[in-house]
Image (cartoon, rainbow, N blue to C red; front, side):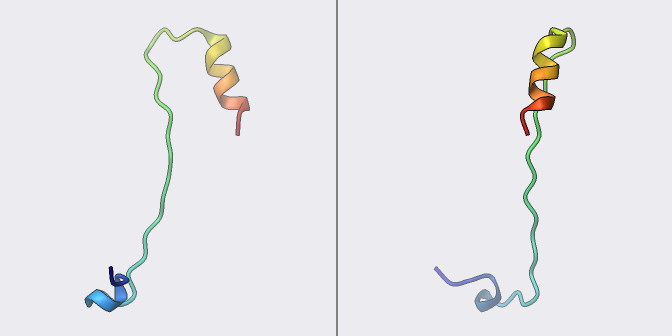
Length: 38
């Protein structure tokens, strides 16, 4: 599999991010635990 630049897209950049979603009403201790676990 060729790299992106080798495929004709020079200078291509990307970023990765992750998120965590919780339903309204999720108990506070669970939200706090998720915030602490970095």
